[in-house]
Structure formats: structure tokens, C-alpha cells
Amino acid sequence: MGRLDGKAAIVTGAGQGIGRGIALVLAREGARVAVVDINPDTAASTVKEIEARGGRAAAIRCDVGVRAQADAAISAAAQAFGTIDILVNDAQRIIGEINVEDMTDDVIQQSLQSGFMGTFYFMQGCFPYLRANGGKIVNVGSAAGTEGMARWGAYAATKEAIRAITRVAAKEWGKYGINVNAICPASMTPAIEIWMKTNPDVFKASLAHMPLGRYGDPENDIAPVVLALVSSDFNYVTGQTIMVDGGAAILR
Ligand SMILES: NC(=O)c1ccc[n+]([C@@H]2O[C@H](COP(=O)([O-])OP(=O)(O)OC[C@H]3O[C@@H](n4cnc5c(N)ncnc54)[C@H](O)[C@@H]3O)[C@@H](O)[C@H]2O)c1
Image 1 (cartoon, rainbow, N blue to C red):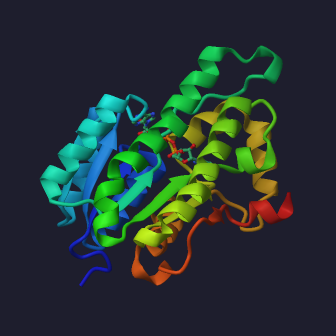
Image 2 (spheres, rainbow, N blue to C red):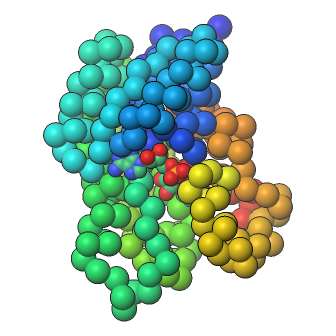
Image 3 (cartoon, rainbow, N blue to C red):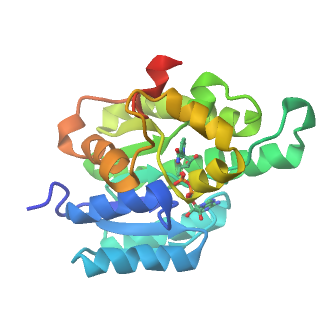
């Protein structure tokens, strides 16, 4: 018996990194998972991994920041699984290392479109399905936003907008039995590996600010928190942000 038997989930950005870890764990617990990613190859490989472990999943290629593609992905998932009970908005175009004075409209737009607008499109598009049975949404913020990380202005602002709509939707949709929460993770992923190689000193300093002394593993450290949030264990928690960061937030 899995904790999510009979449930259907959408996980965006599930081709790699944290989204992949979340998709694997939700599937392990019995959910059928729509693996949504802009990269069809990595989406297909996550689905293969899920199926190899005996789970059920469907790969859906989608740029979450394009409304028509988001709507089509939601329809495809609902058609494949008959319902949508769980939505995890993980996808984000990660663009940083730019000072505020050098930021362009294009950088801000790309960050907002993939992060905030993508999250919004999926929340709005999944709402009718989630309302039917009392669903769960987990959005992904960042300590870059909660702390205001220098040189990451567009990304930080995007992530704080995501946390804001998380709280607003929690208030508006509580009456339908929909829980809306956010996590701010710190996790070793392909994105962080690139950042670590290009900014070794900043990376070392970030480790010094982690009481647990390491970046989390997507599947073993980050996904279990998402699993708790989307399972009935956390039915009475909504509008919250959980820092899944090895304790980094308390040392800053
Ligand atoms: N890794 C960390 O420590 C960390 C820290 C704070 C926040 N986050 C957030 O966690 C999430 C996952 O981060 P990650 O480190 O796994 O990143 P990653 O870059 O390794 O993976 C992101 C995935 O999202 C997909 N994606 C990007 N833009 C997309 C779009 N427009 N439409 C559909 N898919 C798209 C990518 O193809 C990729 O598969 C992001 O929201 C990120 O901002 C990560």
C-alpha cells in the first residue's frame, strides 16, 4: 500500500533535479505522475525510471510559461489519469549573476514567465480538478528570495511572487479543501552543480551556512517533505513555506 494510491499528480520540471526526485517519490507511493518538462528527453528518462520501479507515469513536453502549452499539458494529464489530485510547480528557468543596475526586461521576463506565470497557469488550470476532491499544491520558492540574494534580483523577485500567490490561493481555496504550500529547498542538482563549478568560493561559503553541512539529495531529502505536504498527514497545514535547506535559514 502506497500513501498516494489512487492519486494523480503533475510535477513540472520533473526531467531532472528536484522535480525528478519528487516525481520518483510520488510514484513510489502509488501516484500516477505526469512528468512535465520543457526537455522531452529528460522527461522521458524520468518516466522510464518510474516504470522500471513498477510505477505509472506519462511524459509531457511543455514550456510551463506558455499558457496554451500549460493548458494542453493539464488536459493531457487529466485525460491520461482521469483526474488531478496533486500539483507540484517546480519548473523554473534559473537566471542569475546579474546586478540590479544591469538587469534587462528580457531577463526579468524570462524568469517571471517560467517561474511565476508557469506556476500561476498550472494552479489556475488544475483548480477545477483539485476542487473536485480537495487537492494539494506545492510550489517552489527559494532562500534567494526570502533573503534577497545579491546578483539574483529577477530570480529572487520571481520566487517571492510564487510564495505570495501560494498564500493568497491558500486563503481563497481553503474552502474547497485545497492545501497550498511552498518549499524553499537546497539540493544538489544539475543546476547547482553548474553554479558550484562557476562560483566555488560562494558555494563553499553557502555550505558554511548549513548546520547539516551539505546540500540535500532531491529524492531522499527534498521529496519526502513534499510527500508529507501532499499526503493526508499535512491536511491541516496551508499557506506555509517550509525551508528544506539543512537549516541554512537559521544561520543567516
Ligand atoms: N537546487 C537548489 O538548491 C534550489 C534552491 C532553491 C530553489 N530551487 C528551485 O527548485 C526548482 C528545481 O531546481 P533544480 O535545482 O532541480 O533545477 P534544474 O535546472 O536542475 O531542473 C529544473 C528543471 O526544470 C525544467 N524547466 C526549466 N524551465 C522550464 C519551463 N519553462 N517549462 C518546463 N520545464 C522547465 C528544466 O528542463 C529542468 O528539467 C526550481 O524552481 C529552483 O528555482 C532549487
